[in-house]
Length: 220
Image 1: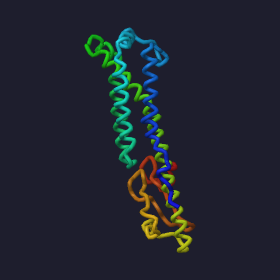
Image 2: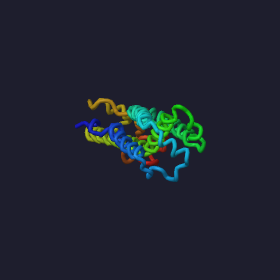
Image 3: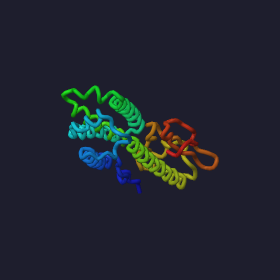
Image 4: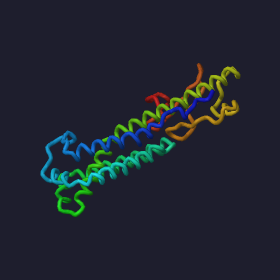
């Protein structure tokens, strides 16, 4: 029968739900004065800002950034998603770097919105800390989905060989088997790479680097 692609768990949904619970717990601990979150001794300005943090602003900023990450994570086209994700991560890293320089807290100490600004910094840093793990999760899901597509296409090639005595000249010849269109390469959006060989065939995706390495690169 057909491979049930819906059976693949959408890991982005787990990110959407589970990590918000993590943020609430982290913010509560920081609001209660838990210092294990900080790698070094806090400066006087940092300690002052923490005492005046708007913790709701921290959660709002965290959720805003997670919302954007999840929206990108739900883009079906992997190549488009990866491009958007790279830009999003670069922008996020730059923003956090601007908020984390040595003079940031001193500049906001006497502003009327010091609590909100400090809260937004905390929320942004919490989110960016998690993005590498989130990105690795989406990458693992993409590899699983692509592997299923290759397995499904391989089964159809085997069925064609059984009935025709040879492998088809191109994947387009499989459409007549009544199983529907051949899934494209999820990383490039182009057809999967397929070539007949003297002892069978070669079938592969361009994979994570989105370049045709003639099937000799890392597994997709």
